[in-house]
Amino acid sequence: MKIKITGKELKITEAINDYVERKLDRINKYFEESEAEVTLRTEKNEQIAEIYVTANGEKYRAVTEDKDMYASIDKDIDILEGQIRKSKTKKDKMMKDASIKTMETVDSHIEEIRDEIIKTSYYEIKPMLPEDAVLKLKEKPTHNFLVFINVETGKVNAIHKLKDGKNYGLVEPEA
Image (cartoon, rainbow, N blue to C red):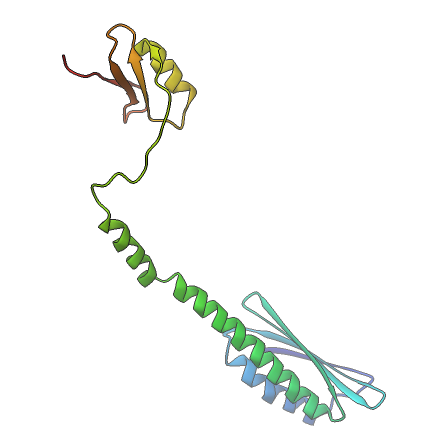
């Protein structure tokens, strides 16, 4: 962990420096790489400790004041540790919800429904020539087929796009 300790209107002693580094080890155990900016200052009779921790793109911040600087640092560490645990728990829960197990149960549920009509679409059937049906289908690039009444035969036909994407197939009823 990279640690930057700054004192405002306060001299950072070796004891305070060691104490902050030792306490930040509690935070460091949660991350492989992290940075901490510690600002210590005094205002009137209050000792204020402000700690920013940046790790894995996340930022955590704690500011506390106390009569004693060491107590203020302890409170900050407790607050930061709580924030980090909450964030990690939230991420773990999200990962668990989107886990492979859940995906497999959803897939197996989908596989159970077979040979059933699950969607019905309604559309108008117009009388036209097969060539006109091809032109109409070209107007709708998202559609793969068009059902129409063949003017020449008076029967219901379907025109569909072939897999080559260039040609079309005509489906006509026999007799």
